[in-house]
Image 1: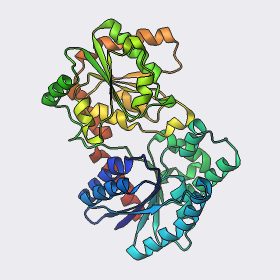
Image 2: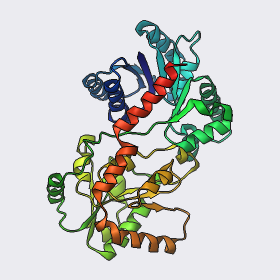
Image 3: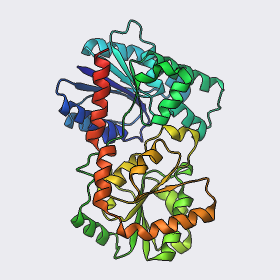
Length: 398
């Protein structure tokens, strides 16, 4: 059985080789009759493409790219690429005998929608609530011409697909409210699984990492990921400052947005905050050094569709975590994790301060192994593969 996974990406994303391909590899190991092909529409440079190509080869995935035209201006070039893309996809499907096509998000959905006489089945990766994310964070005007066009693409694919996968139950509820309750059975939640043998507590690595970071007995907070308006930098600093007033502490920030962090650290905290940019394969080494983690995001409407990848990494590492309410299914999942603190962004500040202070006092007594054991059932790559296989079996039987 041959699958074609189609994406439309900029040059900075690493989720293909870091998230999807490892899950696809795990799926193929569980069912050797499955073969994954990936077609990535991108304007990334040759170096980035070769990195992804090598990763795909190492994982047994057949990978190809289609350049996204950005001239004479980006909008015109993108539209040209979209309309030409559907022909390239149709040709690829016919030449390789693809059985199931998996477009990820809106533009790949548009290109697959354009193909006539479909001889294949479709699993649509609805990817959270991406159009609403554009409204929340990229200035897209709700109910404007572009918004309505994008929503029409999404709606057509939601109706046409044999199955739809999302990252949260809340995203399913939003989509079903749009297209009708009778379509609920075609939806399924798949987690963003991580390699549980990469993200695993290691006492020896912890000692080495803390020594490298010049951390002794201090309580070490960690944040790993992007920075910007939606990632609650000020809230992280407030909680860290509170911790520092209670006990010796440091804060490790692992991010590609180093300048953003360094420009926003108050002078009085500069001696206590470490900012580093590291490759993905080194993230787990530094997470081993930590005692607690931040998984905060601004809870806008679109964030109902998100499954925070870093939350899974932290919990697989056994780290007590402060996580935002209103983000995907986080609150429901964290009912199994009393070791975590759910940060309510609408709570009165003094009430929140008292609650988080009580939680911070307990961090050192929390059982990392117990946190990890529970996390395996939600965030492991094995769990993700199992969920994909359930959707595949159901789609294949239609």
